[in-house]
Length: 214
Ligand SMILES: N[C@@H](CCC(=O)N[C@@H](CS)C(=O)NCC(=O)O)C(=O)O
Image (cartoon, rainbow, N blue to C red):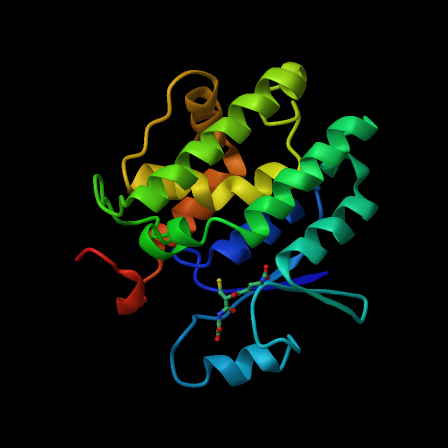
């Protein structure tokens, strides 16, 4: 299995697929393509028909888009989704909401693991989206989280979907109270998250358009 990803410091979509692959216990070759430098688009297109990362290649099968990759990996490693049908439906709903929503947060608080932009990025729209994310986390933790520290107890693709938000909250100094805050701490302490973060800190490329508040 091969996973094509972008810069670990910046590529939030790549992080989602990579976390599902790690949490699923898969052995995979990682192909990291630094984004937005000469040749990177051609390099991505040599693997990924959409021209975007992440892209998963498994014995000739090509799966692009982080949502499809998460679903595919969960078919091969069913523990990546909750076993209960109700919890599984909610996990898919919050994953889909994260995948297609929160445009203001993405724009004003882009993932940038190495930076400390505490206090930056707040607009009324961003704050409303942060409140919605905190409500999702509190709801999942209280209804489904009894079996462990993650949204549905054990780690699922829903946690992978919110992984970039966890790094964003730390970069931009967003500190939820209560169950959501405990969930954020558990995610930032997750060994796979820490492995990704350590690699992000070693990267030397900068994407100036993503360094929003320098
Ligand atoms: N909806 C896609 C989004 C993928 C995406 O936008 N990836 C960005 C990097 S995080 C990318 O490949 N950008 C390179 C480009 O647009 O040339 C997914 O979930 O995989």
